[in-house]
Image (tube, rainbow, N blue to C red; front, side, top):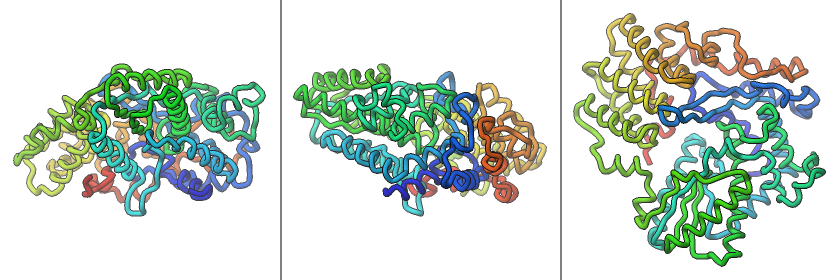
Length: 489
């Protein structure tokens, strides 16, 4: 992309927020208004020091395993987000970054497949990214079984939370050029500018970058691309040449002819990552001579081997429930639920809807990643209940069940989506839910902004599309929750 194309791409609402939210949430107006306010002006001219304030970004915890593993997603403060996009996509800075990526990609036996991409107008960017993973990582790994006899799989522990912000400047400009104290204060280095913006978002912290936007995915690729370059140079120096590595973000697939070579590469990779403050997840580092089967995720292998459907609707959902019990939060689980949702929508007569609601709720309880599609399934089942009182009773029971989980903001957002048509003012604690109700809430801390017009541009009410909210269908349609709708890959 050119600098202007990259700016337009990163300022799209879909790039700003990668969190699954109902369709009435939109960030287009806020991003557009903030962009106008910052046009031709530096953010520092309209503000004090954001790094001295807490709650500048809005955080929402997402559960990874239905138990105690959490992933913090953040809605970056729009002023800081737009400012950083504008800085990165200044023509001179963008050229520096592009040239750096060209260096990262020179190695022929190491390939990165996770640089953000823009989809065609008929497909979502996130869908295109998933297809890129499937084609490049899964299919590419299987193809490499023709050439290599052994495969290792490794990933980085809590990658986004562990990235050292100063390492961004090392990645863009080289460690030697940015390590000296004077270089750290150089405002002309885009690596420093990115570092300072991220510190401003996180109360001055230098460990961790916000997760939940394409912009931060791109920033992480700078650091991980630099790690690729360092690993390639070290392996070349050691004389290790017979290997192939496929990387998708913090996930590594290493293909070799013997386990000894693979272990040597993992040792080298560990040393490179330690220098950047990162480390491999020991529990997820595995190796196998079964390259083809090792290339397919365990949950998908199990799903392919097992029974996937039944003529009886309840038994079909119970098959999916059993898979979710064995592989909570798995991608194959959400795909299976998507298929069930399509079948449910095409079914004219549904028996025992409360039983199906109970099963779907239990799946969501143990696999919070499935909240959106489970909400869609439940919305259809609620519509088959005979009275509003029966629907309200079911909604209350669902809420009580899921509220046993800590940090249920994401769940409440989706439960509100299916309850809003029946009881618009049902009490939810999540801030975004209160915003939908029309309550005055604070999403981003604006105390550091001195410009009244910039503050007005970031009014939280702008992120709820009232027209879509008023025209909301009680039943969640597939196009609301599925990246591919009826398209399958």
